[in-house]
Amino acid sequence: MSDLSRRTLIGTAGALGAGATLGSRLPAMADEPHDAQDTAVTAFDTAPARAALRRLLPTHADQFRLVAVEKRGDEERFEVGGSAGRLTVSGTSPAVLLTGVHWYLKYTCHAQITWAAIS
Image (cartoon, rainbow, N blue to C red):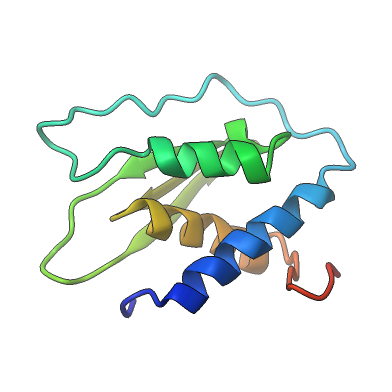
């Protein structure tokens, strides 16, 4: 993944905000969020990304478990896994975690979310 530009970050945040309107159905039940981290091992705090998810996807935020992973050199990366109603997004920064959530919504849920509309 290349360096995130301001445009990409803002676009992702906007897409997540638009995704909040998709909450017309009841979300799958998920267990408690487990974002506890060993700060000696992780490179950053996931709290800012968690706060953004709660703000932008209030009815679905607790379905995502956010996990910080360390960078390898300058490489930014994310990984999405889990099961229905309990998804794990691992990433190298809060912005990359949100990019992973956006990727999941776009390519797995087929939620086409743009500034103009949701389809």
